[in-house]
Length: 378
Length: 87
Image 1 (tube, rainbow over the protein chains, first blue to last red):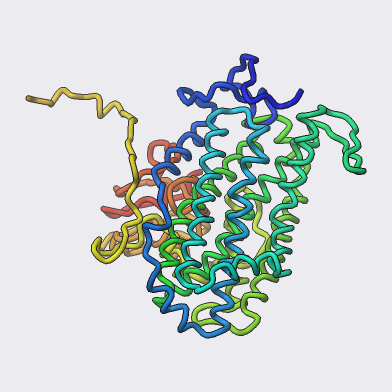
Image 2 (tube, each protein chain N blue to C red; image 1 turned 180 degrees about the vertical axis):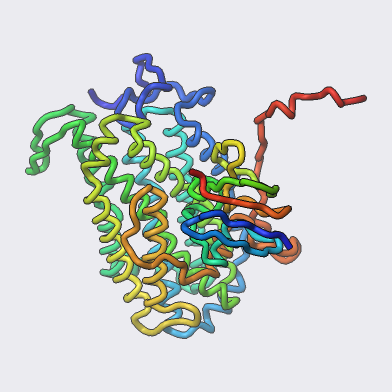
C-alpha cells in the first residue's frame, strides 16, 4: 500500500482521475487527459525569471524616507508575502504529489511550487537591498502573533490532508491510532479533505496574495519602492497562472469531469466552502487593521483595502460559478488593474527591465489556413 | 475611435466609444459594464465574450475558444464591434 516512486502497474492516464487513482509512473507528456495543466506548465516555464535581474538599489533611498507607519505597512506586508510563499514553496509538492495520478498535473504541481521558491528568493533580494540587517525582518516573522495566526489559517487544511494521506498511503483505509490521536481514514474522507485544501489554496493565492499586491503597488503608484513593485509584478504574473490552476482543478471537480465522488463532495461541502471564503475575508480584514494600525498611507487605508478584499472575494467566487457573498461589486482600487493586466506597463527598454518577454516560447499549433501553401512561390 | 456595442451584458445595452489601446475588459470596467474575470492574463477563461460583429486584435491565450468567442482581457477592438455574453 505504501507509496511507490515508480508504480509498476500499467494504467491509462487518459482515464485516471486527477488524484487518488493509480500513482504516476512514466512522466509522459505526449498525451494529456487535461491539456490545460500542460499549457500552464509551458507558460510558467516561459515566464522564468530571477530576482537579481531587477535593480532594487533605489528602494533603499525610498525606504529611508518613508514615515514610520509606512515602514510598518511595507515590512509587515512583505513579511506576510514571505509567509505565504514559504507555505506555497513546499506544500503543493508535499500534499499533492503523493496522491496525484496524471503526469501532466504532477508536472504542473512541481513547476508551480518551484516558481514559488523563486518568489521566496526575491523577498530576500528586496530585504537585503533595503535593510542594513536583513536578518531582523526574517527573525520577527516567527515572533509576530498576527503573522503566526495567518500561518495557522493558511496551513491547517494542508496539514490535515498531509496527515491523513500519509496514514492512508502507509496503512490504507480504517481506524488508526497515531501519536495518541485516533484517525478514521477513508478514501472518501480524504477526497473531501483534498477538495477543501484546494479551495483553501485558491483563497490563499487568489485572494490573500492579491490583497498584499494592492499594498505593494500602492507604494509604486506614488513612485516609491518601484524596484519592489517590479518584482511583485512578476510574482503577480505567476500567481495569475497558479490561481488558474486551482480554479481549473476545482471546476473540473465541481462539473463532474473528473472523479464522480468529487462532484458529490463539492455539493456536500458547498456551505463549508462559502464559510471558508467568509473566514478568509474576515482574517484578511483583521490583517488590514494590523497593517494600518499606526495610520494610513496616501492612496490606501484599512477601509479601502477591506472594500477591495470584498470585491476580489466576489470575483474569485464568481470564477468558481459560486454566488458572490459581498455587496461590493465595483473595484475600489481601479488603478491596481494597471499592474495586474498582461501588457500594461510599457516603458523604453533602456529605462527598465522588460518583463513581458517570454523565454523559449514557441507555438507548435497549425490551423488549416497554415497548411495551405497553394499561393507559395520560390 | 471605435464603437463597442454592448448587447445585453449584465443587463446593459449601450454603446461605448474607445481608442482601441486598452483591452475590452478594461474598457467595460471603465464604463461600469461588469463581467466575470479572474486572471486578467488570458489563462482562466472567466471573461469569455461573444464577438457578434467587427474585428479585434487578440493576444495569445491558454483557453480554447470556439468560433466567435474572445477573451475580454486579451482583445482590443480594431474596428467597430458588437459584443454580448457567451451564452
